[in-house]
Image 1 (cartoon, rainbow, N blue to C red):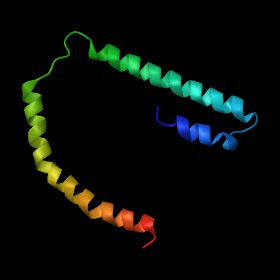
Image 2 (tube, helix red, strand yellow):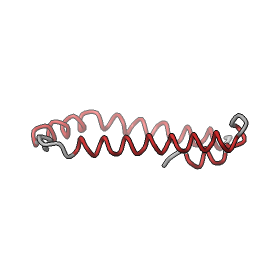
Image 3 (tube, rainbow, N blue to C red):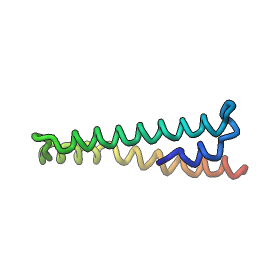
Image 4 (cartoon, rainbow, N blue to C red):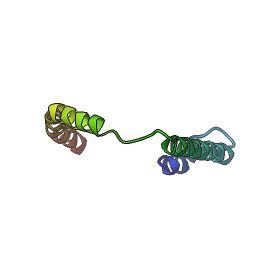
Length: 88
């Protein structure tokens, strides 16, 4: 679960009583995770949910159209952000 480490490390940032409020936050986070997992699992096993070959091919064609732009964006921005984080 993403966020458990952040909550555990930030217990001091919670209002008093810190441990109780952090525990409640972790419990709610677990409840939300379980609810989303069960809901998506339920939707995935419903009758009529099938793979459509035409949709998959259309998606592949659309990806070919805009993927070069995404790659260019990553190639040009990643070095910039890495340099700014390094303090250069």
